Length: 228
Length: 367
Ligand SMILES: Nc1ncnc2c1ncn2[C@@H]1O[C@H](COP(=O)(O)OP(=O)(O)OP(=O)(O)O)[C@@H](O)[C@H]1O
Ligand SMILES: [Mg+2]
Image 1 (cartoon, each protein chain N blue to C red):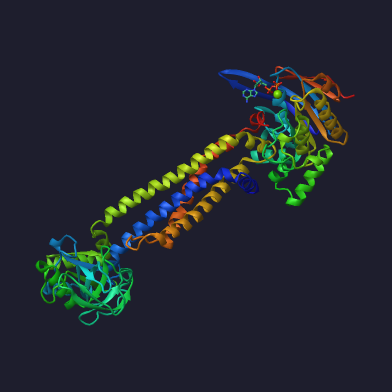
Image 2: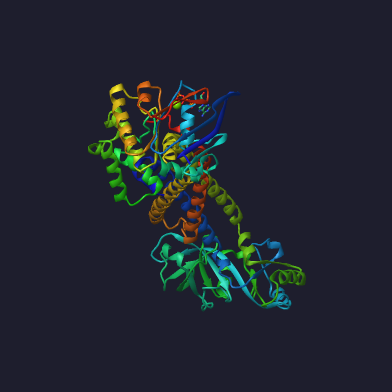
């Protein structure tokens, strides 16, 4: 069985009396170690799909089975635990806590998950920061970091729990091309180390590096480039 | 838990104004409660310390000891009622007491009794008195001769008794003859003859129903009104009004405390919605975040109670002894539980909002 198996996902939003089909019978599979890019125009449903796979949101119908657990039917506590231990999120806006240092931000999933003692958490946090090359910035606040560095802190935060899957929703959207490339290189390296990667992007250059490219339009998905 | 305390430590300053406001409300509650208790204790001690369950008034006196007269013949009728084991005569004279070494008159209640008063030893010899310890603050010492009433009748204080005051006047417990003398000198119109008392307290035989005995007494005499000790306490002038007024003020104060907490955490939750959304995205469950909210509510309340308690104790020392302020452990516990309940209800107002924070839409914002 595939690592992630989505079948017939539907999600409709009602905005001001009008129905918006964000997902319209979307099915896809993700294998362990895949690097998938999801493309499509704005408003096509990319983020909705990423959120459903990541357990941030639940579909109206259909199923998302990850490691044998159907997220579409999971309760809040199960979903939270799944997000905490299986998924690393990287968002377009970095969503770091501005009053916390880089290291404190990185270890917050461990605090949320009640993992280990303080010393263990800090050690894990430092290791994650080392992996993204920011160990020397552990004590800096987000405002003292560049955009690219902030996003790498966010990646370290996504990594700290050793997730099987990283979901990155436009991770380079707020960065210039140079820093964007830096962040992409980081994510690709993690993928080579075995982490499954789902990236949502507008950027053709980013999509070009992915193993598979899926395109969403008006809530329907097509695979535009398959496994190499 | 860890989340909550982490934030409390980190943004301590944000919690200070609310904690201070709650602490002030705790001070207010302890003061109001202490005043209520002090007024109640100082007004009712003489009646509450009676051993007997029932007390008979002259019906025309409308439950006022000072207006009441019970003649020896009536007392004999009472004693003949089945279920009455024994009776004790009781009377009060409110007087000014001239205390040695002081210029001011102390308010005193000279109480004539025959015994059966808890905490007060048997009636002393004529001209001697057991004094309530509250008179110590007015300069009275054991061995002093205080002079009471307009004719300055001398009473020698031979020992202290506790919590026996009547309408904020310091209790001076004397044998009935001394009381009659004091009453006749201080209010000649109210003078009573030998063996006459204002009240008769009734010891109900074990097994007998006090209420039935009371009804039987009133039926037998035709001139008395017999009520329980608790009813007599409530019949004291002002006690009911006092209780009702203070209870309302205290209730409103608890309401304000709940609103302060509700408003604070509602604003805090609103302001933190993006952050809470991110925490949810990172795997915090709604239950965990609600737990954090409740932990913070409790922490704020506990700190506020401790700070408020210390301030109240400090004020208690500064306040002059004439102010009948008594902070009892029971009152402190009541305030602690009340403020805790108000805060938890106030905090719970934000519960729904926290549960409904959608991590997917909250993460669009932030830094
Ligand atoms: N919480 C919501 N409430 C109402 N409508 C929503 C909500 N989230 C998404 N939508 C709608 O669903 C559709 C898909 O949204 P989604 O965010 O998945 O698009 P997207 O492909 O990620 O777009 P973008 O590239 O602009 O990020 C859009 O039409 C959007 O307006
Ligand atoms: Mg999007």
